[in-house]
Length: 285
Image (cartoon, rainbow, N blue to C red; front, side, top):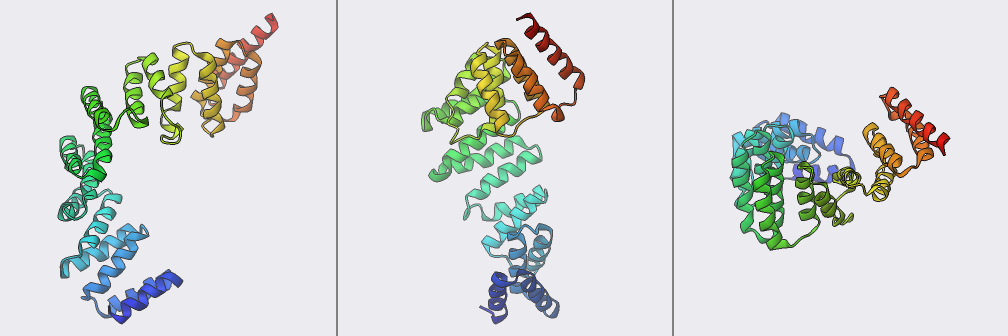
């Protein structure tokens, strides 16, 4: 390796700013040096200085062909800067070496609304055993994103045959049932999800609303408590929780919750009405 690049790599560990300045000076002195341009571009992209990283990698690419891992890094930076068509071109160069390039290509196609191209790209991963599950997840996610419910159901059935009824299966099927207001089924599927596998913020609000809709108020209240405890105290969640508490006859709890989260509530008039109704019920008791 070039002595200058060895020094650059050593400096990165101790003083990244100095390392960048050092190699930029070397590039200024040797503007056509492919190795310096590629090394700096790779490093800048690796620390998500994408625009600068792209600039140096593209300059290097005009001098000589980039190494496959540099092409992949360039594609990632192009993707992060929303230059999706250019990113796809770079991913296409290395997908035979890095199968995950197909995954990223699919995401790029989704971003430019080329859904069938996205699906085709994702399907290339189905032949790679270690990526097959991720590929199927991506295909299902894409169909769900464009609300193609029939294909979501079809792909979920294929997924079930291969991987069983795991948390992802129940999440996606729960979401499909929820969209159709089939709250009994959505509540069932959400109840089967392991919190260790799927984060609560991906489904818990739908789960609480499903339970409330089928009048499982005690369970819904518990879920709302957990949602709020995890820091999700938006206005709608507070009002939905208050409605569940009303159904349970927990009128003092309604007042306490509305007052506690008064600062996040924009509709003060509705909050006042809810508290008034709760006080009225308490006075009747």
